Length: 434
Image 1: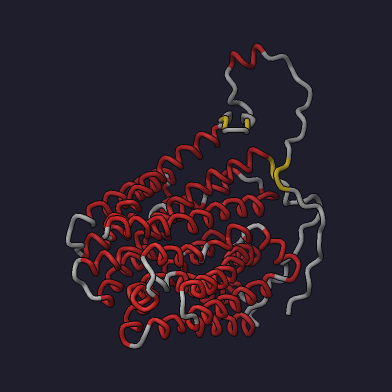
Image 2: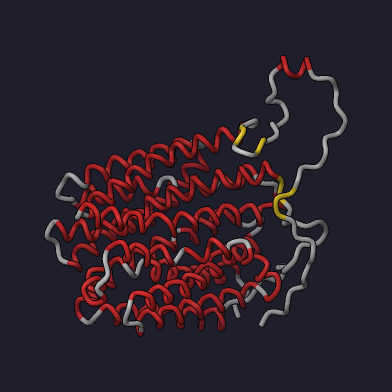
């Protein structure tokens, strides 16, 4: 067992890389799956999106499961489910078994992903937490880049089943690493004391949701870009291996751009500017990509632009959530992310089937990137206070009411406590760490 927090982070980083690797294991081998299983690109998009479907239902319950049986145990269960789902995909000989395998793998990935955010916080609270979170965040593009760079080549040399089997073997290796080397920090607790941390008011619910919409739209655009760029490059005449490698350059550049953008935001401020510049630059770059021969310099530029918004967007929930309600607030935030990731990739696949080319799917992604800026504006409006949404009137923050309204309103009694959207009262003691 490792006692040093940086060593513990290294185990978590190694484990989380393979979540991105498995998620992105479909696009590099998609042409072979279409040919062998007799499926279309809409179904390929569905297979990509199904990996995220369990998150719609498990982002919130995952925190409760961790409190009941322990963080490490939840991550190990997640890795086991990732491996099992990979085996079902490899052994299956039809589209529906492939769907089942992706859902099982996605269930494991969701439990792993949500829980790891808490584990890093437990280790680094008050000690380089932002740095640790930044390192953990880039494991997702690293895993995706590894899949894009390797699995197409493996599938070309052997078969798409052999390529998919790599995700099973790596999940087993990560599970062994967690079992052998990771332990929970000495100060970790499985359940909070005092009042319920799972009660959240209407205002924070909508603030968490509007921040989640920004993260959702940005990530959907990002995933569609990297998922459909290989097919677009193959339409230009490049081999499956070359198309996967060139597409992976987007991810490798993002690995450097994401922490750099976070550093710039911390040192110089301007988080909103980074989000706007990054999303607008990505939209323009991807739009130009569809009208060009896809030069490498353009692919690298898209990677830089796409990496700028990630860190700044992740700071949005922390701006609006009270410390005691960050857990459920982040659960809401990630629930929207998983909804978008399940819904939009099949839409991109359907666009490709309808138009006969991957370029139109990339244009759809460019439009989503531009739309992220509008979602950021909505978040800012909600944060400013007093925004009315259908069926929900949000209370204004203190000080935002007009002077005229303040003058015409007599002093009122203490306001009633805001209605809670989610409330959990029962506390379950954690089981001892295995």
